[in-house]
Each structure stands twice: as structure tokens, then as C-alpha cells.
Amino acid sequence: MHMGVTKSYLSENRHYRLFTCHSAELVLQHLLRHSWLHRVVTHAPFTLFPSSVPKAALLQALALQTHFNTLVDKISQDAEFLEEALAGTIQADDFTAKLFGIYKQVQREGQRQSIVVGLSRADYMLDQSEDGTSSLKQIEINTFAVAGFCVSDCLPVVHRAVIMFVVEDLQISKLGRRQLEKELWNRNIPFICRRFEEVSRGASLDGDKKLFIDGLEVAVVYYRYGYMPEHYTEQTWDARLLMERSLAVKCPDIGTQLAGTKKVQQVLARPGVLEKFFPDQPQVVEQIRATFAGLYTLDMGQEGDQAVAMALANPDKFVLKPQREGGGNNYFGQDIVRVLQEVQSDKRRAAYILMDRIRPRTEQNIQLRKGLPLNLTSVCYEIGAYGAYVRHGRHMIINEVAGNLLKTKSIEHNDAGIVSGVSAFDSPLFI
Image (cartoon, rainbow, N blue to C red; front, side, top):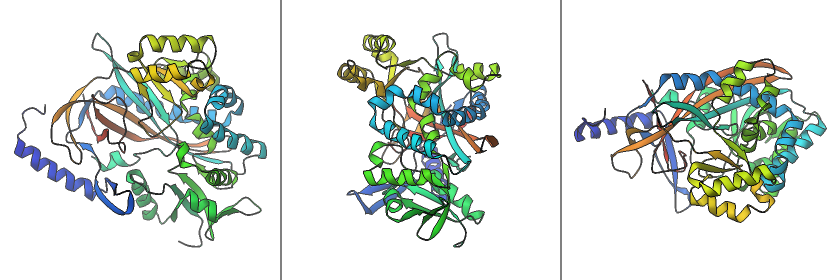
């Protein structure tokens, strides 16, 4: 559908859409000479045209999201399940072990705050079979610092308690955060932004476990940072524990972050596990399970040995996934062979899971990215379904679908990510 457009149309269309993009604050900051004092602002990468998306597939993803909200929330409260599911991973992955250590300490002390807020995004691709039909298959569930909230909408007071955004030192992407800040501003809800180091130096708890920083009580902690091991030092791990032990509402709390790990994703695919969380809802179980690709444990033992052998024999058929978020962390092809040959005989392999590689349907589109020419290329996309929920004690008060996100990349790339420079924002053109 794009082949008939002229170069002059592309140029005019590009300039108009770039102006619209900046007006909507869909921008990224790039550091020059690795200094915050030297930076430029440019538009976020996006496609020139919306991509063709089967409407049924997007509706399927959105219809499932409240169930995934419920699933993630139930898992976050089930200490026995998390300990069993993550047993091997905790032994092999220090980052997950530290997160789980905070979770266990908070569980032992008893959670002071009974309100839980969750913002999540389940990502899918359309798996294309040899007969031309396609089916929705899940890539992962994101439960921490979920990026892109409000982006799809942009494409088509001192004495009160505040909301605190926990942010990175040099924040490259402020897309979703800026939109959320505008919504809070429009509703006269005060907020502050603090780095982990600032929380470590200036935050404290009173006798009632209320969280204070710089003389302000914090009602909600919203994490935009803390999903990678390099985000933490010994002092900032203490800051994370301080916030988790506080009366402030956490988004997400530590249990919800653990519920979003790749290992939990793999355990959920085992027979009978979904039924544990939806005991009287066989239809929900069937609908969720239909989106699972093949998922395999790499824990020590016969089952893990078989998965290792399977991946080494046919590495192009699989994706090797560590317990990391943020894009650019997965292994493909010969990189799978390299990593598994290194860890196959020791417990380090339990830090990974193995997943069938999705063979996505492709489209033709043009990506608008800083420094790249306007070329029509073969692309594939991820369908993201957003979810939002609020639980008070054992009662789910709000459980909603919160929109969708389409991220498109060239088929030349294996992994994806907006900030990593691979994917671009897109809009669905229903077919």
C-alpha cells in the first residue's frame, strides 16, 4: 500500500509528522560526550504509516489483560509459589535472589500497606504457520517500569502527600513518564522525582512506617528504575528495602516484580499451574494458555538437560532468556550455543529459560529514526496490551485494560526495544 507514494509526499509527510511528534512530547534525550550537560532532544522513533494488524488479534490481547492482571496479582501474594518457582533461579542469579530476599523480609515483618497498584503490559507477536494462518503468542509480561503508557493516545501542593517517581540518573526516555506527569498535574496531584541515591540519603520512616523524603510524606512510590542489576549498589538495595517496608503504596511492589520474571512465565506454562490461580474458570485458563509459546526449564536435572540438548541441536528454533527487562538481553542462534556450552554443566544455567522462537508475520513500512534514510523495509511488530489494577487487602477494586502499544522493528533485528534503537512506535491499521 506504500509503494505508490512519491518522494515529495514522503518528505512533506515526514516533516508534518515530526512536528506533530514534538508537539505531543514524543521525544528522547541523547547524551553527547556522556555528559548530562551536553544533550540533544530528538523525536522518538516511529513508523511513517500504521501497520496492518488483524483486529481479532489485538482484541484477543486486550480481552486477556484483566485476567493477566489478576494472575500477576495472585502470584505476587503467593510466597510458597514464588519460592518454589524461583528456587533454581535464586541459586543461579544474584539479582533475583536479592529481590526475593527483600520480598521474604517484608513478608516476615508483615506488609504495612494493604493497597497494591499494578501497571503491566503483556507483549505478543503473531506466529505465522506454514499454511499462512497466524496465532497470538506471548513474548513476556512486563510488571516493572512499564514503558509507553499514554504513547498510543498521543500517536492517533506542599502540605499534601506526594507521588514519588523513582528515576534513573540520566534518563534517556521520558515518554510515558511525561504523559503521566501531565495527567497528575491536570488533576492537581503533587509529585516529585528522586534518584535511588537521593532516596538512600534523604528518605526515612517514622514510627508508623510512613515514608518521608525532604520533609514530604510519600503516598505512592512509582518505580521507573530498578529493573536491572546495574541499577543498584549496596546503599540503593537498602533504599529499596526501606521503600518496600514503608506504608507508601508501591507500583509495583516487590512481589509483583518477581511475578513478572521470565522463570515465572515458564512455570506458568506447566500443566495445572494456571488452574491453581483460576480454579473455577476453565475458559480463562484455556484463553491464557492459548497464547503461550513453548517454554522450557533449564534447571539442573533431566528436564533441563533435555532442553539444553534441544537448544544446542537447533539453536535457530529457540530464544534464550535471562531474568532481565529493558530489551536487548535475549540470545539467539549461535549466541545460544555459546552461552549454553559455558553454563550447561553448572547451576548458572538456571538463571535462564528457553522459549520457542516466534516466526512473526511481516509487513512493509518506513521507520522515522534520527539519522536513517526513508526506506521501505520489511518489518514485524509486537502487540502490547496494557493493564492497570488496584487491590486493597484481598479485594480487587479496579482491574482494567489500559490501552495498547504497537512496537515495530526491521526483520533484520532479533531483539527489540525503543530506547535501544531497534524498534519504533506504530499504530494498528485493522484488517
